[in-house]
Image: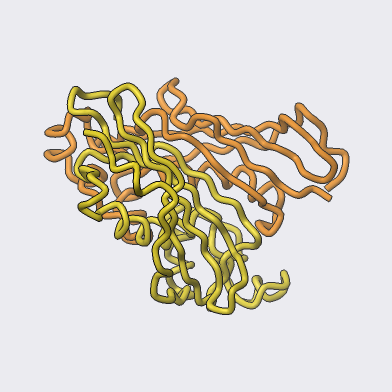
Length: 152
Length: 135
């Protein structure tokens, strides 16, 4: 099933602001087994010059995937979400996410192509503060496996 | 950070991923896809067993870099492909992922680190690279 190529270049309105919670950062860091105090201990973070706990680098996926999901569920795009796997992920950072940041995420569909019977969708999620300061951009390739199988 | 040259090897790390790790990560990340915690559904869709979230493996692997640079504000870019799933059996031992990293390019004050993540002798992340500011 081919995806609707009219979606290439399409941008969606910014998501509602996401307030990065200190305990969420701590929970995410603990789930990854992070031992660096900068993500666990507010005093340690402040001694290192941050205003609050520093989120691990992949924390941005919480925002970008939630925002992208709303987009890829658009029935006009034609993506069968039950067959989707995450193929590829890249982040470009201006700075780390810090607890207390209020962030908005703007998703753009960067590319659509078909490779060996699999549909591949590249989304770009620009994550910035509500004041407009860029923090991180997340590029995700989602692969909808063809119905004849393929690797997981 | 000075004297960083191509070929420099970062201290490697080994991560144990059990079902408990997956459940903790699901809760912390908000990714509740059933293939990461429900063996019945995982095998129904053709997987050998429950598999780890790709983003979990990605989040573990970058610790080789963040512990080395000791300041994640030096991290400029991080990306990878999810080439093979990390299968996490419910056997009390789980899966072991070993991550190594080496500097593969230095351009002015930016170093490129190439990471390798191996589980059961299989590379689970492809083209895993991080660019870090070393100046």
